[in-house]
Length: 576
Image (cartoon, rainbow, N blue to C red):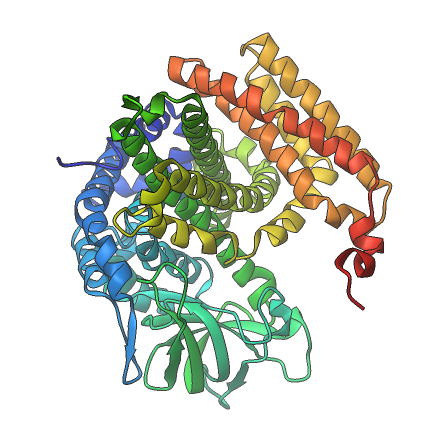
């Protein structure tokens, strides 16, 4: 039977049907000025949302009926390195060709470059559906942030040359950051960039490792441009092509996402062009690129989790033991309910983050173009630019941590529901289990996300956001609002105590503080759909019962003041 990962997903459809993004769309479309230039540009809000729906339905169809049936063969065939050339699996090549033919490779790019000019919110939805079909394909489709970075920071001649090629699917991209001795600590990047006298061309020399889709046609490379300048100030960002001067030395032999080639690259005097300004490669351009990638990985995790949940639900309905389907057993019901709750809260948090990113980017863009005043309410929005930027910065690490951790949990529980069958290659759950594992690692581990989000929690911004959400949901059930208010008070006590301790103590408990913040935030996000959907209302009730008590537990752990891991590691781990 033909499926569709958009129209067939009641949770996504529920959000899409009730979303209130009029302000965002007016900003994204610059008061619909493109309607006079392009016949596929929307003329008003209703027209835009109708177009969004048709595009997502197309993505849902291609994902369910073209990409997903090929995913198992892609996993088995894998990407291969033959005589120094990377070869995608056949199913990967066919899927990329299908996405290109459907004009889905320029999702967020402006129409003047052949793009669809869609907001990040829509892109997040699309990434989830593609990832549900084949997580490894997302690592190519989901790298459209490469083109977005070029659009945001590169010179006009680079934009004019490369962006139409991204939109048509003629080229793919890669972000080339990591080195053997520079993983999380990118300030230690050593790949050298040297400028040719009197020319715009630079030359790149050195090695990069763990590069997703490193065989891409267009590479954005972080390199050391300032001899003798250590740290981030010595780094710049460059664009180069994957020509004969870029040698793929090996493809990593990985646990999962086999269709995505993870490459080690050798740059041999590779010609490159500077992106933006010197010395700002890491501090501005790469941080922007990585934040987009982290949101994309969150969506990837949700897609994998949704695939695992769907498999578990189907199996539990069909598998009969002791005369009845196993989904009727209380323990299995609990597992399935918790799995669904995790997927849905991660999805809502990803959408919330995407909207914040869209608002921040569009306000900044329209200010730079001096067009913000032409948008209804533009003057007021201009004053909120910093707020949306802080909100996007706070939510991005939180959703990356939460969505990828629940992805692993849901895949684990899905295999448990299928029991021995789930451990076998006869079912796709074992592939989901393998594919999910990397999501908490690449683009910054969960622990790095905790540290990145900590300042917004301890500095008071998150509490400010909670108050805004509380007021926005003033008509929600009093019991739920009261429970959230009490949880916020509990979190503040933990934050205050941690603030009195040293930095090591705060970093030790960063994960617990982040878990509390996400738990409360998701509670507020569930209140809105619960108003119009009996299903969502029951989901919210289950969430409040199962999750809010965690805030009290984490508070007690923090207030205990336990420093064993900090002060007694030698004795604790029994080493010298």
